[in-house]
Image (cartoon, rainbow, N blue to C red; front, top):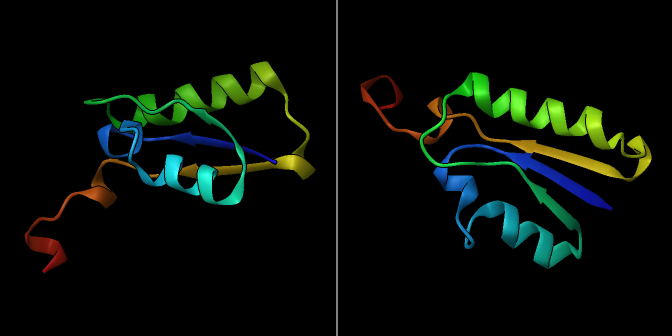
Length: 77
């Protein structure tokens, strides 16, 4: 199984959920996360690489965390 992920610095770090999940489940990780990028780039990097690699949908898992969902602000309290 191949795990394709994207997000900001919280997905990019070597101790992130993406690396933890791939290690626990034994998935081949393709992580396109990068620190300090917005949601537009997060999605575009992932879509571009999925189209380029064209993985088998039956052997592919995709996970994305956007910047807003990883930040607490007054609307979340």
